[in-house]
Image 1 (cartoon, rainbow, N blue to C red):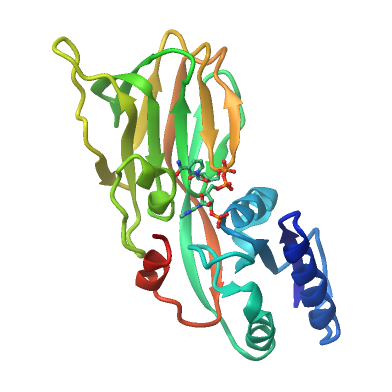
Image 2: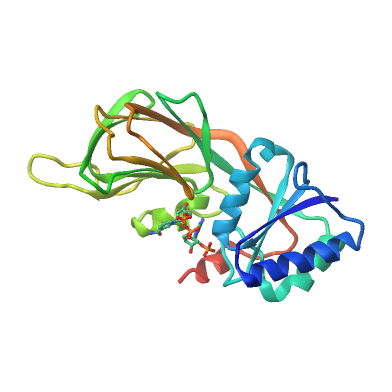
Length: 257
Ligand code: NAP
């Protein structure tokens, strides 16, 4: 098996990385950073996001496994204290593959299509952002506030949850739109609660002025200075999580708070 490791830059994660690499290589696994079949992410959910973006170009050809060096997370199945159990499972078991689809978006002033596992956010912390939202080319509403967040099921426990969006059960593929500190008053109102929508919806976000806004996606961001329109939808790209043991969604949720 060809594998690669993406590790958080702290001592504990680095030690786990060195140990796993040495153990797997001693069992004839081949370390291949360019064309791995399995990417092991050591650190936390944030490290897995980093790994996903690092290997986005070969996403459909690889599986991911997460090891958390803090408390267990949503994308991580083992803790730093369970490394030997993890290595044993890797060497002896066949994993179940759990798929999680990525959102995609494109700006009108940039030909690149970009992807997100957790969410896409338009954020403006400098001044209130006015933008029009269209869903399947039909005008939905004008948002005024600090921005909006479009989350996947996987991202529902991340930024979306801090916006009081709903946690979505694993296995459901859909999108959730939430506003970030919306302005609601007598002359302007918006939906004001999260909107959970079918995964085949297409969202268009338009504004004459995104000057001080950013498009944030997972841990990444790009300025929207020259942008007038953003198109977002669910993509056909999936993150394949290799699950070597049962660790229920409810257990993951209970670990969250
Ligand atoms: P980061 O430090 O990598 O992550 C921020 C926190 O979000 C960490 O505790 C991370 O867990 C956790 N997290 C990431 N994905 C999660 C998921 N799907 N479910 C539950 N928790 C999750 O921060 P970053 O680099 O700025 O952004 C990465 C992600 O963090 C973003 O996609 C966003 O969803 C989330 N975030 C959340 C907030 C918030 O809730 N207010 C603020 C900023 C960012 P680990 O400790 O396991 O890595």
